[in-house]
Length: 134
Image (cartoon, rainbow, N blue to C red; front, side, top):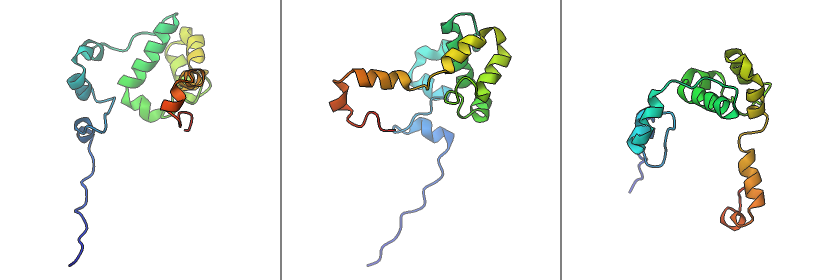
């Protein structure tokens, strides 16, 4: 009686991740529309322009990253490099008037609000005992 190894797995492709229930590619527009057709208008619209309001600046920043694959490749740590990172400099070059808003948005690490909430809400501790482990 011999043991045989399983056949080699085929390499995953971008379309595989949209079909497998254990993964979800947030940048795959077709996969998003299959699950949430109500987002079709958002997906069709161009990124908003940066404005003089925090809401406009953060919508511009997130939409730009979400829709521009080249920027995600160029700035893989876009949100974690902070207000003095290369992505921040790039944003400021696109919309100099919104520079203070971009710096403010990028000042804190992206998960800081979640960490603060977890620390304050002791009822979450038994549910997520490893909630602060990176």
